[in-house]
Image 1 (cartoon, helix red, strand yellow):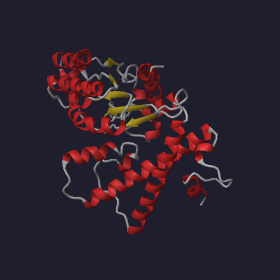
Image 2: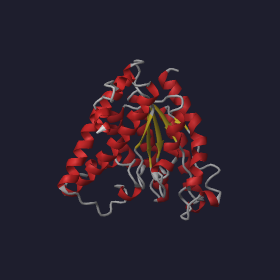
Image 3: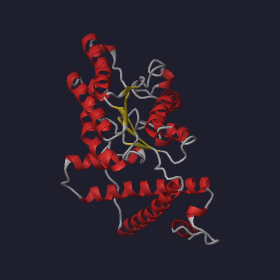
Length: 303
């Protein structure tokens, strides 16, 4: 009951959410927003269970909204989806309504200083999707919490999908830009292109196109380079590495650091597959990328 009153902006003293201490209001808003997002993702699974003939593009758009759900329920795995009874669906609709109220209140919080909350979009694959661990343990969530010390209302939208390629990212990006209007976009894609031996010119073209779309949307782009094992041969390996450099030059995007630098060569920091970093590696990745993302945000926000 108290939660419902709070969602409507009421406390036991009759005050509104906008009148709470700012830090408490932001913390409450973030918590309710998280519950709202999780409920929405579960509802999407229910809808997808009933819809048998939706298009490939629709699936990609839906997948972008579930990357903050648990790995067991991820669309990436595309395993058996959970079944829902009627009462469960009604409950989810109730949470969605509550989230709408909380979102309205959060707009009031933002309007106090007249500024929109900064938003960072991470468009990546399993390295950014926290493969093999809880999403809260991944470098994206860790970086978000660190940056919130400077921008309390900042949100990092993690649109990363395990197994995604540069072509998949390019298909999904326009909708993501329109939906989230990010200030900064971090592009962490290309690793799966390399592991599958896809043509390097296509990878470079896709990376360039994504960065240009970000720039045209008025946002700042950062491309994170990736490395592949040397057994792919020196010619392919060298061309693969250069594609990230060439794409950043052609698009005007910032070329970030290889996020597994100092990690990939340490067996205790890599999972058994030798491809994905462990939980222990996530703070190190966050350490590496936090400063670059912070600088891009400061530039984008004019601070």
